[in-house]
Image 1 (cartoon, rainbow, N blue to C red):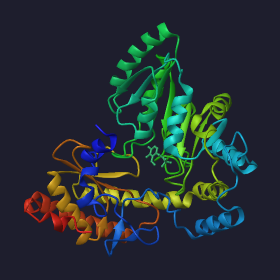
Image 2 (image 1 turned 45 degrees about the vertical axis):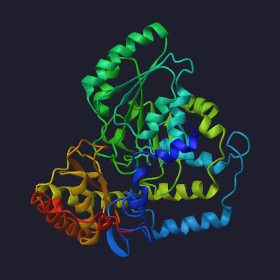
Image 3 (image 1 turned 90 degrees about the horizontal axis):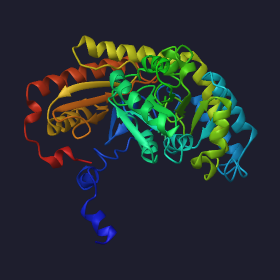
Image 4 (image 1 turned 90 degrees about the vertical axis):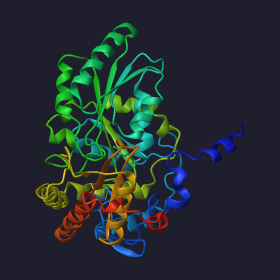
Length: 418
Ligand SMILES: Cc1ncc(COP(=O)(O)O)c(C=O)c1O
């Protein structure tokens, strides 16, 4: 069969819906300035679907810094990879500051979290497959892809289930005794879908019994959790026990780029062995300079405090009204409901068109049949008015869902309106 014929015959689980759903359900276009309220489908909506946690994305000081950085450097400099010709004093300054902030010896910049994190996993493990990976089954796709590149043994432990982790650590320990390899445990600071923090304290406690190194992806914790904002490790009092700490600039920093932090010799090893950075152009200067500005604002507690005021108001409001928000102990706010995929779509259509509220929706096959998750991401730029309106809207749609109103047939074209 011709390769392209196969692709055309099977566009994939989401791709099959592209013709009718693209623009509204998939690849929606949120227009206007990045803010608590944006424009969708010709209407103003309260936007609950971007990880602009600290509200820095469109902060006047940030916009000014971004403009000045682009004006000063252009988008090209430096050219080449860090190793060849793309290194600068400013890249290293940012690395020193990030490392100190997350209480590690050293850090190294990554152009993107996704590729960078895969590459970190790839670089630290034995190319001969002597090591064993034990990773949380609900790890982010980039961690799973990093695991998939590894030729050796790997075990997935049940999400945040310490008994399951321990069972796999026992098996892994037996294997590495023979192979003379090591064990890498992978978890996240915050799991982005459900908002529950990785049980880092419990995982770290297992170091007393098993010999392993711990890698934590703190994409959703960096800048928003912990007393200073240093993330989930700081929040749980175990930052020192995280051996490899990785975080992205794509969320609280509202930019692009990422970093890995740890012991000096390990970061030095990564610098010389991480393929995603050795064989790719260095992070352009405007991103580095504006990351330094963002970083100073991130350390200023006022944005984090405002964020948490909003998180608490939203989450307490939802709980008071009887909504199930699961085990979240972060800003990520999932609202669990029950209904079919069709009901979920009609409900979200109602939410967007009539209540002017835009949030992410998760349904089967990502989660079990009959379950619906509406996922809200509060930010520092939301207002209490946004939260009040959202609580009213959620009460309205939930009572319609329970009353079976979304079971009523609606022409699909109506729901798929673009
Ligand atoms: C947990 C987690 N890890 C990694 C990434 C990838 O980071 P980036 O967007 O910088 O590629 C994301 C999403 O942005 C994420 O949510």
